[in-house]
Image (cartoon, rainbow over all chains, first blue to last red; front, side, top):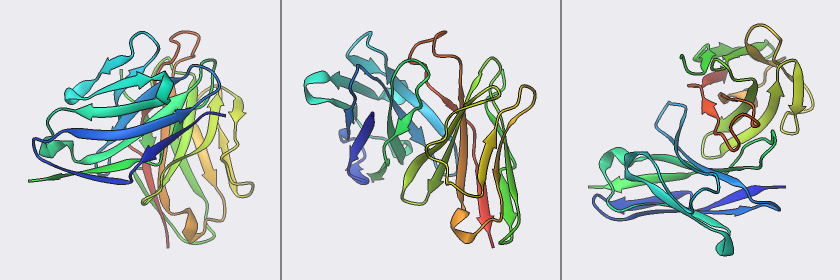
Length: 113
Length: 117
């Protein structure tokens, strides 16, 4: 069965610094991978997704992620953090053909002034 | 096209009462997921439904919890005889058939925050 592991339940970066949120997946077949963001008291919003078209995926709000099959990773990055990026970020995986979406435990991103 | 609609946004129930959470998927979406989110614990999959069918309920507690997605109307997550441990945020998500758009993402509602007192 597929799964995702997010390393670090809390990550703190200074405003303007690089953001790196880690996600490793486990899947027996090529997966579809997603990053979602959740702001306080809100639902989840899709940041970006990997569907095998390109290994480097660009999303909203300046985020991007790179699919690395050899490392089974799909880390999320942003070159320069902004205060408004403070939120919780979830990595998720699904297979094709009506499979459920499985989420990681989430990483709370804190932005230091 | 309205997004995924969940109601109520907040629900307070006394121990032993029933909680009914509703989710109207986006137009054209035939797949519905329910997730539970506890503080500091992330999202836990509960159940995955298609119209009139439960596809995967491996995340549902064996007792007191049930879900349906009828041919007409919203999906309902029902919790009978609630206990304090049921207090959580419950999120619904919907997606179109995967055959239509392979690897499509799920679209989330704003959630229902259940508090059991």
